[in-house]
Image 1 (cartoon, one colour):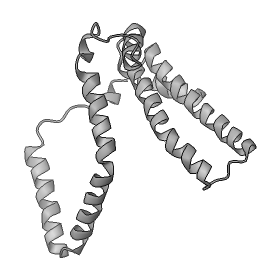
Image 2 (tube, rainbow, N blue to C red; image 1 turned 135 degrees about the vertical axis):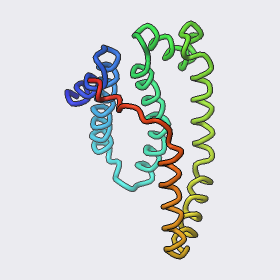
Image 3 (spheres, one colour; image 1 turned 180 degrees about the vertical axis):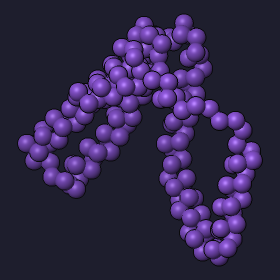
Length: 165
């Protein structure tokens, strides 16, 4: 828990960052407690029950991480609570100016990505298999071309954000 609190403080000198770290630490503590509870209830690893709990844990984990990231990006606790309430259907985030339209696109985009993930994974696996069968000179030429394009078209660089701390 202390590590996560310090991690939040390291990301920014604001209480919202510390709270973000606290939430992640609390999630890790809760996870450990759940594992202990499952062990006491006799849920064995790789059993049907364990797999079902794992599948149910994915959307819960995603929702909890989404909520915690609100505190990471919000300008104040008021904004964070307003956005969180709107995410839970308990209010509207329209009075938080940077959020207008952003949350809806994030939610719909994440849902679309989750639905398309099996197809994307299949496509990438097939592409990597084909890529691996190409002659090494073709792959090397492609890598060199990509590196050259990044150098030429990369634009201006900017300082890494953590160098400001």
